[in-house]
Length: 261
Ligand SMILES: [Zn+2]
Image (cartoon, rainbow, N blue to C red; front, top):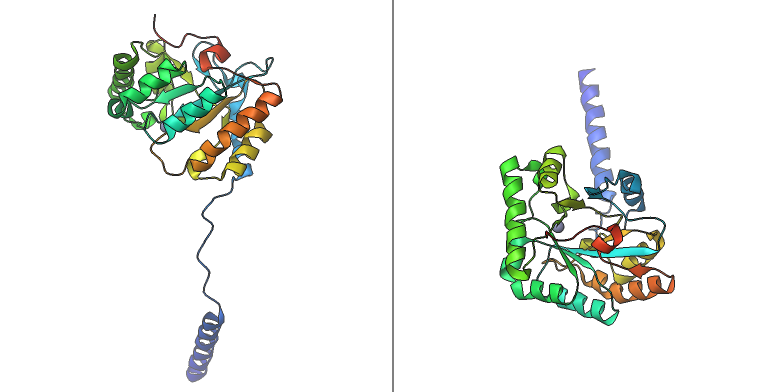
């Protein structure tokens, strides 16, 4: 009986080995351009509702009444994407809002000056792009103050608009920001441009999701995957203008002050 059990065991092993040998090796994933997961994007839709705005303190979107939208660019300034984006905005006569990282301003003050001089609005994206939710209160304060201070050194104005890195914030972070009378600006439409989508994908995604009052999140950071996004920018602006949208800055969209007086 015992021998028979062994025989069955050997037979099973042989079958498993045979099947394994016959199964072709799984091909490595060759897809380099990820597809937008529309389920993930729609799952986020709820929190982008204007109903979650806290007037004067926190905004996800502008009014649904007017056909106005605001482009925002995070993580700059740097020298590769920023000049390309500025040239497109200039050509299309569009003013946007740039949420800049303090240490990037330190590296490229001339780029920030150019952004400001060309009429765009500058907001604070912390000094080191830290996850503020994981930071102690003192560090949250320092990140915001150092970020604001270096922006003031370059453009002569202290920003009041804050975009927490990754959009991560909690009651503690909010309390620090509100105590300074600064304003949190999140977004309504995430292009997820950092993922390296091709221009067509970015364009289709933005055009299909756009609504009145939307704040669009894009990037101009040190990132090699923004080619498709930057390439799509002109087409997106031209098409949305055709649809009657006006491009405005965040303070115009939300009717708030961008800088300390
Ligand atoms: Zn960022």
